[in-house]
Length: 397
Image (cartoon, rainbow, N blue to C red; front, side):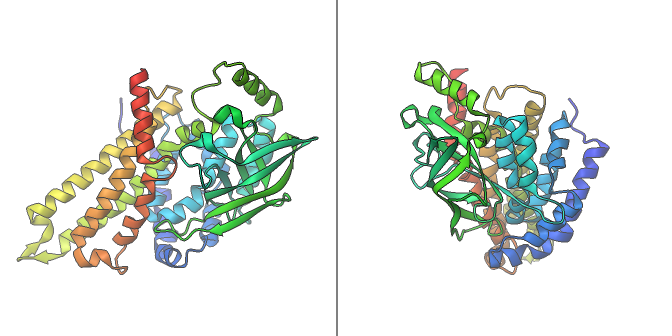
């Protein structure tokens, strides 16, 4: 067991931190206010090599599982909304890589990212107006029509939903089978019948596009079924005959793989708040001394820093388990996401408290971090769902 970072990891960390400090922090408030998608920052990230398939390939080859967590913590330290604009495509890439054929991966992954000169983004569309955590209730339908598939339905709260070039759409083929009758389909932005719907105006992560995706007789070729028709038909046969097809749906399996990456995003926000609160507590004086020297504030800072470090260790363990092919025997991925999300909310609230009135106004960044943090107890599995997954895993062990 060795907790030290290699020279390569330290270089990655420094590289990402310098980019966040130079390109993200100075414009974070601007994009939070305007709620525009930060294409100029994404272009700079692509030019620097931060936004590329290569980053994900490097992570896959890193047996420590630290490449992406180290980079993402620094980027989300800069701004969570801009960070999601840079790394939001990773979710659709995970779905494509996890279940797609080699041909689908080689064709569509480059289209998700575009080029350094003209970057593009991808979107993974699962959630619907009546189906969030309960993916078995999805109503978007996919019907075979000759050699094509025709999709109808509405997706909501989709990251990159209004700006994506490639969509991975989870739809129901056989409603009688619940999640076992679902499949994922690759849809190009230019395919007939798909369009962005309403863009959501959010409490936080405002630089990240969150929109509806509407499918109205969206017709796509038969080879856009993720994983191929033969594999899907075998899955349907097993389901109809009562055989097990696995405990999780394809959507939930994707979320299980990506939860540690969501957790590290929350850590970046929490760390930013802790660092700012410490600096403020050193400088702000009350009753003749810096407020950090008052026990009430010092205790808050101690708890905040301790909680963030606990989260970081959980994420790095989960990353190591995944990188080395080990099983999450205690739902360590869900544990990391649960702990980091709730810690980010608690820590950023405490930072606001330490700054007092200054923490409540937009002249200081802690109120933004407080707003940004809340989504991490909600999206990609609420805290309640994480506890359900953890409890189920423990009881079935």
